[in-house]
Image (tube, rainbow, N blue to C red):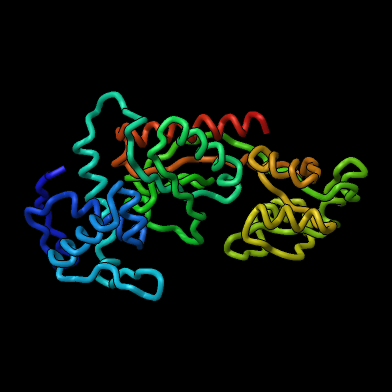
Length: 317
């Protein structure tokens, strides 16, 4: 591909004029992979060819881009400062050059980055990867953990699709609700909570574990309990659902998780579930993307795959 790109990155005080788009594509791969070998594999090039391309990028930018540190390579401050803009340029160029016709899945070469709640990654990730590989063998999926704070990664093009429970508020972000589910109580076999009809008294008298990636010792369940004039005993907090379920199997703790998404792991660990003794607002599961991908054929296809698998998992429970 020998497209000439005329683009000025004003914020970084550099001008890229009459630049072969291959250099931008290679730079994007090098910065994302942090390795000449990995970038070469991603672009189906030999390592010597990628090394020569890195040399051209260095001469063009006047910067080393990646420097050797021990056995690995580290991006320079300049490379980090332009990474998001380079990635956005490559994505925009692909959108311009991709015909809005039938999508050739067998020939599609793309890396999709998904940022997901850990329970969603565990429940859907393996199925999604298998489905994508069966239909588009050259496509790669990168799963990232849910961020502790709101980020601009969707807007910057670092994340292609976000799966979580909160619809976006920014106007340039799109979302689709894939389903809703209820929390269930999870405990070990033989737990006293299972011995009789679940009551609010039994629920609050048992020790509890909270799942919070921010380490919070309160969540919406505590607010609902306050409306009933009661308080539960929270003994600990862990960052992930998987960790919480392992805690439960070895203790008398109770934990609340999305029943549909976690059903497979709960069965695998031999744990039991019970209904909650109070009614909570159902949890929504949404997929969020930037508006630039609204009509992108490959992104549309990915969203369709995610939608089908999420709905399958939540139906089977």
